[in-house]
Amino acid sequence: MPHLFIETIAKTAPPIDTGDAQRRWTPIEIPGSGVELSFGRFEVQHGRWFFLAHSTTVVLNGADEPWGIIAIDHGDEITVTMSDGSRRRLCFSSEEIVRVEPCAIVGGRCARCDQTIDVDSPAARCVGCRTWFHMTDRLPCFTYAERCHRCDAPTRLSDELQWWPAIPPRVGADRGSDRRSS
Image (cartoon, rainbow, N blue to C red; front, side):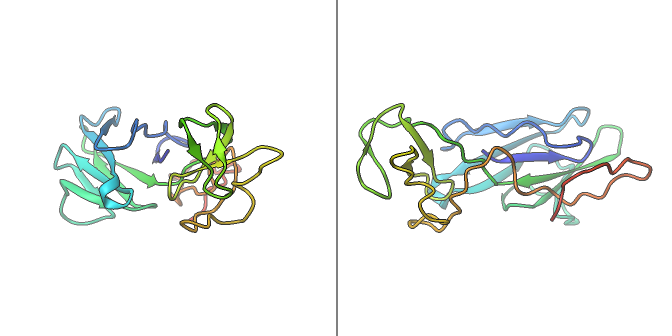
């Protein structure tokens, strides 16, 4: 699931949960802003993410004029004007963490070997084409190659995000061992 990084939070905000991701918007309220933001993914747009601002106090990628509804891409910066007049920057990441999980489809077939994947058996779902693959010791179909043969998305299993926004630290803030990169 995608993530929304907020400048004032050290690591990441809670992931954006879009449920089944089909024509559903999930509002993300930015504390103290009085601004409600919604994100949604439309499958008719090949999995493209959209951003809807319910206010004119939101700017995308530093544009002079605010936006209503627009398509957003991985790494886009959203600026929100807070109720006190200050601004907060957010970065959108479309990156999803791929984990081995119980297969959620009945009668599904593995995209690599074309064998049936039993419900609740260990499997992985491609973040690009959303198809399921076996992921067992006997059938490691998902990680068989470095990239998905259907959509060319990476087939790396991970428990952490690989991309972090390059938000410069505030003056006097402790940089610590932050692993953010652009």
